[in-house]
Image 1 (cartoon, rainbow, N blue to C red):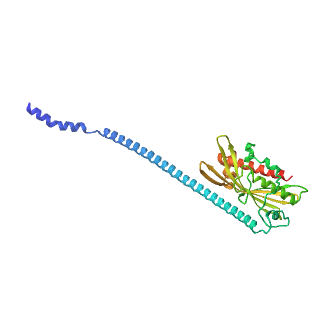
Image 2: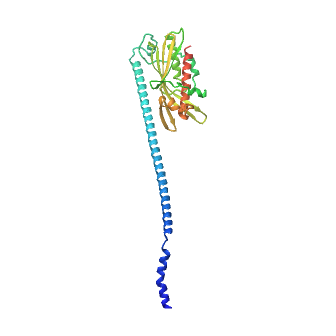
Image 3: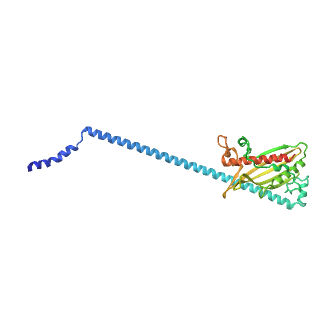
Amino acid sequence: MKKFLIFLFLCLPMMAAAQTTLTPEQKLEQAQRQLEEAKAALEQAKANAAKAKAEAEARAKKEAEDKAKAKDIEKKIADMKAEAERLSREAEALSEAANKAQTTTATPATKAVSNASSDAWVAPTTPATAAARANKNVSTDTKANKDLYLQKGIIPEVNGQVVWTETFNVPGATADELYDKAFAYLTELTQGDNQLSGSKVALVNKGEHSIVATVREKLIFSSSFLSLDYTQFNYVLQATCRDGQATLTMNRLTYRYDVQGNVSDLSAEQWITDKYAVNKKQTRLLPVSGKFRRATVDRKNSIFEGFAQALK
C-alpha cells in the first residue's frame, strides 16, 4: 500500500503538467484573442488621441480668436482716444482764438461782429433778438420707419469721415440776411435744454458769412420715471452763406457714453457706419451701435430741417 501511495505522489506533477499543456488549436485561439484585444486597445488609443488633438486645436483656435478680438478692441479704443484728444485740442484752439480775438480787438465785440466789411474770424456776441423759429422743431424722435436707418448712404463718409452737408436755396435773400438768420438759429440751438458746457457758437466771420458752432449735448435714447439712457454727443456745425444760398455742414461726431461708471469714448466713423452698426446681411441694426445710429440720424434731420425753416 505504501508503495502505491508513493507512486501516486510521484505521478501527480506529471498529471498537472499534462493538464496545463495547450493543444495547437487552443494556442491559436489564445493568440487570436490577444490580437483582437490589442486591436481594440489600439483603436481606443487612436480615438483618445484624436479627441485630445481636436480639443487642443479648439482651445488654440479660441485663444487665437480671443487674442485677435482683444487686439482689435484695443486698436479701436486707441483710435477713439486719439480722435477725442484731437477734437479736444481743436476745441482748445478755437477757444484760445476766440479769447485772443476778444482781448486784442480795440472796439467792443458787438461792433466787430456787426461790421460787414470785416474778413477776420472773431468770437460772436448773442444778438438781442434771435428769431430761430425752426429751433422748436428740433427733436430726437427714434420711432421712424426702421428701413430708413438701413438705407445705403444714410451715414455719408467723405475721406473716411462722417460728414453731412446740404445747401439750401433761398431766392432773393442776400448773404447778410441769411447769415443773420443762420447765426440766430445756431445761437438758439446751442442754448437748448439738453445742451452741455462748451456748447456754443465759437467763431464767426462776418466778411465771409461763415459761422462755426461747437455742440455738446445730451442725445437721449430713452427716458422714463426711473431711468434716463443718453450719451454726450459732440459735433461741429458750420454755416456758410452767400446770396440766395446757405450751406450747413455737420461733422466731427463723437460720443461719450457712461454706463454705471464705465465711460466709452466713441467716434461716429467707428460706431454708426455700416461696418459697425449693421449686420453682415445688411438686414438689421446691431443692438447698441444701432440705437446710436438711429438717434444720430434723427438728430441730424431735425437740425437740418430746422435750419431750412429758419432761413425762410
